[in-house]
Amino acid sequence: MDDKKNTQKQNPVFMREVRCPVHNLLIGRYDARDGLINATFYCPKCGREYTFTIKREQNFATYRKKS
Image (cartoon, rainbow, N blue to C red; front, side, top):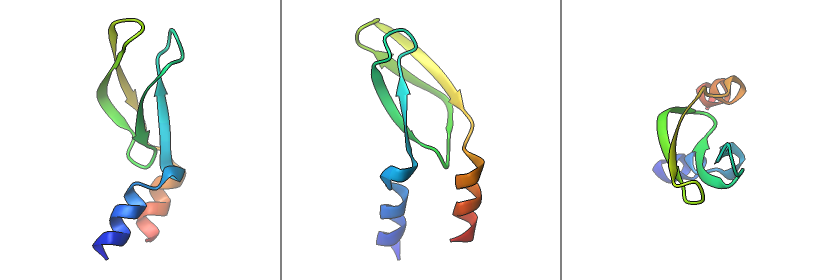
């Protein structure tokens, strides 16, 4: 059962990308079912850190409760 939970947690269907707002460079990923709260990502092109807060996606949040 624990193996099933781990594979579901890392399912690429739920992964979303975090991109630099200036260069559109991929700087991170997050799980859409959980969202992000004050997560900081560094852009190597800009040399700046960006802090993101992204709400979880509700359609995935309800999916999680059913399983």
